[in-house]
Amino acid sequence: MKIVIISGRSGSGKSIALQALEDIGYYAIDNLPGMLLAPLVEQLEKDSPTRRRIAVSIDARNLPDALTRFPELLDDVRQSGMDVQVVYITTDSRVLLERYSATRRRHPLTRDNDRTLAEAIEIEQQTLAPIREKSDLIIDSTSLSVHDLRSRITEQVAQHSSRHLTLTFESFGFKHGVPTDADMVFDARCLPNPYWDINLRADTGRDASVVEFLEHYPDVQAMHDDIAGWLERWLPAYQASNRSYLTVSVGCTGGQHRSVYLCEKLAAHFAALLPEVRLRHRELGIHTALNGADAQGDGDA
Image (cartoon, rainbow, N blue to C red; front, side):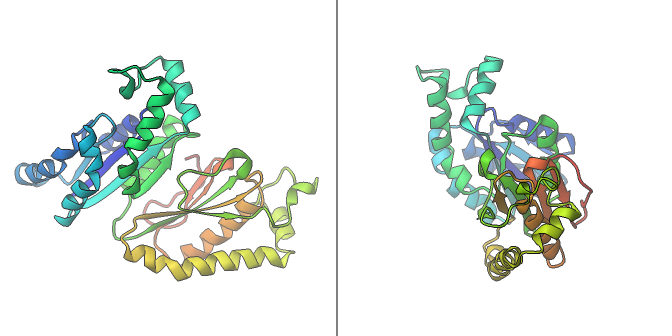
């Protein structure tokens, strides 16, 4: 039996994620009290032995004690032998303020007290910290459309095999902010910048012109080799700790040239070593699965 626990900040897309899983055959339950997680699994195993996939939402609408005890409750379920994935969806606080202001919906933590919306958003983030710390996958939906978020849930959650670690390389631009779902971040801004060549400015790190420019500099290859070597040294340790996902982000100033080039090379290198490698260029809107049963071409995600 596979269980997916969806959590995260209100307004970040938890309902969309749960609906996406329900649409592809998961038995979905919204706002499950955390204390009922283990009893639910036990009852479903007894009454519905053929039901193999369950998705539940556990969030700030729960009682505070259940959220505090979430790590303990999760361990109880995992010790029973269940395949459990915890997915935490987050969004930038400023974007959440805009979303609630635009829709005029009430935040769950403002309904029974005098908190402002901004206070409720920050208190919720603190309240959900125990769940975020135990999450297998963090998805930042700040720049994702509804379609993009559904695609991410389908690709990274529903089709994920618990037997393998999914390694994602993500390029980004520091001027647009560091990805909040990154497990580790490398800074490529010290490398020669193709942007200052007017003939290369409109190209990206996927284009032959930029590739030729960057490969002219030994420091570029040295950074690639250092990152690859570090990952090869430590990936076994992450796998041994039962990590299901690992996102390695590489940033440059605009997220168009240097970071894109390095992520392309790193993803190609590790695709030959691991069964599930994905490549995401945040500023280009491109997400590619390099291998695995769900491998697909370029597309928005």
